[in-house]
Amino acid sequence: MQNNSRTYNSMKNIFFGLGSQIIILICNFISRTVFIKTLGSEYLGVNGLFSNILTVLSLAELGIGNAIIYSMYKPLATNDKEKITALMNLYKKLYNIMAIVILLIGLTLVPVLKYLVNTNIDMSEITLYYILYLLHSVISYLFASRTSILQADQKMYIIKMYTMIFTVIQQIVQIILLYLTHNFMLYLIVQILFTFMMNLYGAMKSYKLYPYLKGKQKLEKRETKEIFSNIKYVFIYRLGGVILNNTDNILISIIIGTIYVGYYSNYYMIINSITVFTTIIFSALTASIGNLNAVSNEKRKYEVFKIIDFCSAIIFGFISVCLLILFSDFIKIWVGEEFILDVSIVYTIVLNFYIVGRLNPISTYRDTLGMFKKTRYIFLITACINIILSIVLGKIWGMFGIIIATAISRILTNRWYEPFILYKDYFKEKISKYWKNNTYYIFCTLLNYIITYSICKNINVENIWGFLIKAILCGLLNIILYLIECYKKNEFKELINIIKKEKVK
Image 1 (cartoon, rainbow, N blue to C red):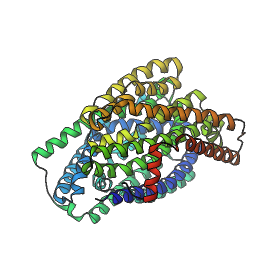
Image 2 (image 1 turned 180 degrees about the vertical axis):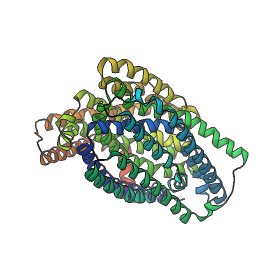
Image 3 (image 1 turned 90 degrees about the vertical axis):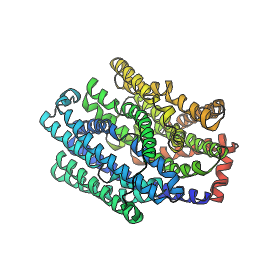
Image 4 (image 1 turned 120 degrees about the vertical axis):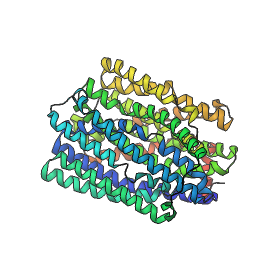
């Protein structure tokens, strides 16, 4: 594949991804607003809690998707249809097994729900809602494996387009039902039906674009063994990640109360929505980088990484500064002042967002280089530290303690270890080069926050127009400051050249 094809596909994926996500984001905010007005904070907390529990239950999936997609980069680059078909058949078989495993494990948790949910809603209702969430999780695996080829083949824009259409229709139906019935059960049933239809359509689309996938080819035992080895390593890594990212709500529910999960989930929804936007960019680049890593030399891989890391620093620095200044104002206008969390909690939420975001370039290269084995235990260690710290600090400082524990555990482990492995074993470069750049980026972000906050703090936000004025000023100041700070950097100059020439040299 030519370099300009990689860039073209990346830009196309980013364009369609961002466009569809803007529409989905608008629908999500409208749906969440209606949800709060019709069902209240208690149900909002249950929604957030069960979403996290089912994410943890999906541990069986961890590793399979990444390992299979990684295995498809080379056969797609060489147009090896038999190998691709064999990989997809293995993927389908494994996903069917996972659906059954998740269903069985999920049902065994029904008796312990009363210990996890701290709410005034009747437990019989809670059990019914949980089973519906469980069915939604199981159904999400049906046909889902077939869309992985679109991701590996740099066609994420197709997935984004049909996902947007189904999501928008689903949200409209759910909003209407909430207004007419105030019924949480109907809300969940609609979610299940649309997830099934979306996955079915995705599978049909994949078969249409890749008709050879209907073949019955199987991998050789040696190849299967290698894939299962990668699955094992990615599973161990992702296991820690899921535990780390999805225990905060559970601990908040147990230690503080399920209703507070609802308050936190409003902030989390905003963070998650923004993360989806940024993930679109890095996901669009992942398949192109996977192709690049399959055919390019080490020097070129390192040069591209530095550019992506620079983009990550600017993107997540810019967003973090804006979030710190605008978060509380937005919550106040959107759902009301009573839903605003303490400023210390807001700072920790944004800190976690920044730490995770800045690891995106590392994660992208980890997945495309197959760097599974050497990083497999780091997230488990992070998760263990997080649980211990969250319980201890949660008892002392409440929600702030639980959330800051996550940031501390990341800083102590994977935030330094994964860059170290990438530089040492793959780039053959000194890790000091990475931290020199990152120290500068962190300094710029802190300086920009101080300057921007000092200028924007006196703007009184009482309505949407006041918020927009503050947001525009905040954004413009950030852009100007980053341009002043970074216009001389080589990564910035090369990025401009790439944009001008519309290809990676």
